Amino acid sequence: TVFQQVGKPITDTCLKGYNGTIFAYGQTGSGKTFTISGPANDQKELRGLMPRVFDYLMTRVERESRTSRGNTTYQIRASFIEIYNEKIYDLLDG
Image (cartoon, rainbow, N blue to C red; front, side, top):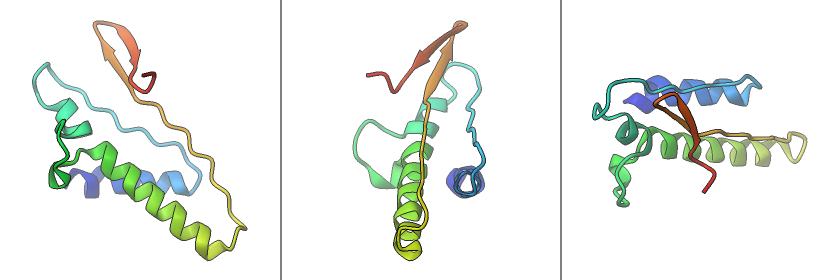
């Protein structure tokens, strides 16, 4: 799956302290938004890459926080932007 090939390795690298980027590029209508976000409804098996990465990330942080007994802290920053017609849109700025 795209998550196994792209999302999981990048997330694992981020948990080691490195920055990670997932970039979807292609012509209009090629499925970039669907691949990244998934459908508008709540079909878990069709979730996009972003919700799968966030689920995996939070599961790993929770597990590692329990096993480290509070000796490890995490600071997570995320950006979700769209570049369309040479303009940048912040998709997390609701």
